[in-house]
Length: 397
Ligand SMILES: [Zn+2]
Image (cartoon, rainbow, N blue to C red):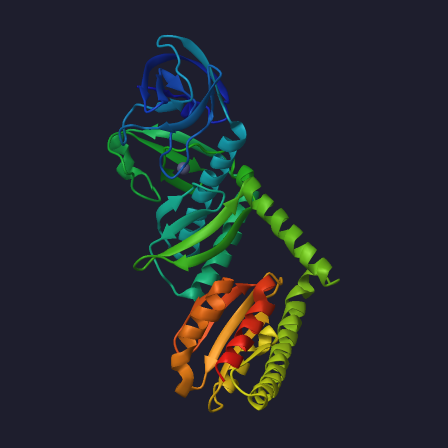
């Protein structure tokens, strides 16, 4: 059994304790102490890291659900009975406290905004999420989120005190708890002044002010009739804002515009791209028709390099000519590889496979297909391939 120092003072970062048990399991050392500041993964809050007796603590967990024991996973063993000094990684823990306190504030904000009840939370990463017991549809959800976010940040600015206490089992039903406890016996409840009261075993801040800002990031429909809401709190909300601001500012810089002009500039680019694609398609079609006629006039079989944009369309048009049998090739962007397209009029399709095997595979061409053969070849072999096919043309008039 370990005394839970993180409940007595969630702001303490160093402690001394006695090692009560050590065992090895798969190259990891599992250490138990008579008292600890290391919070074990539970209630959605991730475990602490840090050092014990100078040895790195990699993981902290409870071996039994709702049990009293806490196990520390270490890189190296400690001596049983030894007094050790422990230090937790405060930067990490403080973020967990911001996430957890922010989640309490948000759960209450959603309850007040729209009577949404929290059914599950995850505080595992900087982007926390809360699941609620309703699915109101996307439009109504937007409105509730906006209201809850405002309420939550008012609770932050009001600098409400956060406290925790043990309540005997008999008194639990008398409390106006936001949700029922998951454990029997006496219950640890966390109170945010007159804002929120909930059973919880996590670590929390002294005041809601330390959890701000609270920013909702979005939502999605959950399983059955539920909604999942994503949020960031404290430092992690500020970091997100800074990163997004940096990105948007850089993007605006590329347009030589203000950040709020970016959507309009992107729209303009999209319109231009759409028009350019249409124009390129029309030109490629015109070019393809020109190549197809040229090849037909020269006589089949024929071989020719064409621009990549005109490759497929040229192939389609050539294959319409009676007696057609042609190798078309185009350089891919980057110039390292060439795309090959071997096409024939339906009455000569039977010849494609053997031509491919005899003339192009020896050069390293790889490909396949039905009706026509598509493939690739190293760009350096492209001229050889065109000549090899012209050779085929001479032998096979
Ligand atoms: Zn909590």
